[in-house]
Amino acid sequence: MVKPEFQNKKIGTMIMNKLLSKINELKKENPNIRVYLGATKYKESFYEKFGFIKRIDANLGYGMILKQ
Image (cartoon, rainbow, N blue to C red; front, side, top):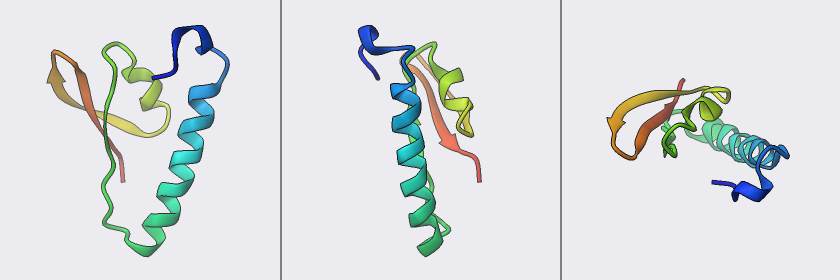
């Protein structure tokens, strides 16, 4: 999670774009790679913008998986 004082400056978006770029490279070698993350509670919509979907968990926030 990006520290609150640095949020809304597109830093998280930049990080996610870099990570997804690397994931896509790895998927070329192994298309069966699955990507999971634990979203901070109430921040799930941020990850949905990048193609992640919710996997219901609850107390700590949703576990999320990158859609194929």
